[in-house]
Image (cartoon, rainbow, N blue to C red; front, side, top):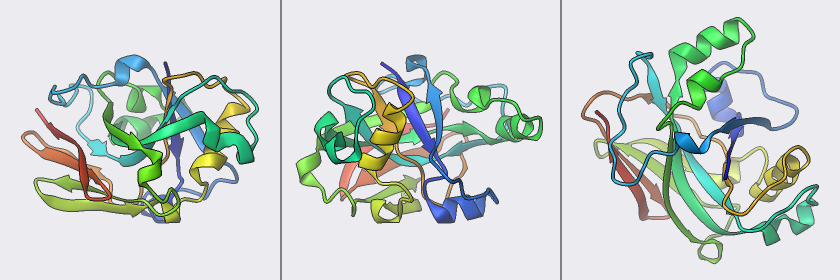
Length: 202
């Protein structure tokens, strides 16, 4: 399986990082080794002094597809989840300055939190409310209605470049409010009032 991540899909997040609004979805990958095992804490890696949390709605692909038309994209997933795309912001900044790929900043071991998944029928897909709490304080408060590209559009776009396979996970982008994690932080993800994950930072 592979993890497909979408960058710059919420206008306010683009603004907070002083990035340019893209003409099409920004796509990057994480290996399966990026997934933090269930019930394991997240250990801040030694190569970064600025690990940021980015909470995101997740989609799990349920069958093989390529060149999927937007009108058929809904047939390729039946569950929605929540997770975190951890980013070594200091490493990313150096990579961006030199025009280099982001993988060291985005795809390192443990950089992907994958929480619980729920039937998509439980949601209005274009109006999903989700939050990230840091030590019980809400630090990110998002809603999929603010996405620049909706879930089905993302699936269609990604499938033009990569064959989607059963078990693949798409991270659909993060809203504003990203910030640094510190040792002993507790991060809790909530989607439509349901706790999808909780992790401790070491």
